[in-house]
Image (cartoon, rainbow, N blue to C red):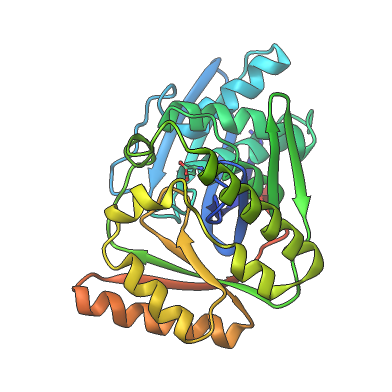
Length: 311
Ligand code: HSE
């Protein structure tokens, strides 16, 4: 029986000011999903590795199978597909873990079925998995994980995904403290209303960040990496958040923020050397608090999800 494996990368969603509308993909870190046809109709999760036994094997609760089901429903077909998931990403990390599983599952299943869809068309199916996982069908992790690059979700109704340019030499440092924060919980602390003033400030920053990316204007990118909507409520859930910011700005970072819904913190920097320095300083901050962290340094990954094995 035919068997296809796909890899999908980690992602940084929101990118400070772009709550639910901005995200980018990271190199190397990610999840792998293998799909194979089986004789009996229906979707099954055959095995999951690397999750410490925490993820559900039920097809209606697993992001891989929920995403594939949305795809099969759109095609109006029933199939027998078994899914094996190899988690490379920690759960509840803010690095788009559930999104990467769904993205890899879709890219693999699309190949298995003879490529009925273009990559772009897979995004809404992955959003259904996000809806199941956290209660909100946001696309700012799944779109960059599938498509790669830095993306803007210009609109959700209808879905309008725009790939943005990335200035040469833009690096991201990810600081992952060993804490787990569920997206649903981290969404529940958000205020449902914002003031006119906050909306003006946030709009200016989103526009500034995008203009900065187009113009390769690092000063503008730095000035725009501010979030007055989600960060004030969510930063309270992440120890050391503001200390880290102070430390990395001192070594020349462009800015820092919560990666997706946290607890991972992302830092943007011009050049690898500054990104590495920022990682080093961040580690020191967390050492003081007594929390272990993983540090990753990456450029923006333009490839997104890809087939890694096809038998
Ligand atoms: N935009 C989503 C949120 C990303 O902030 O809740 C979740 O990773």
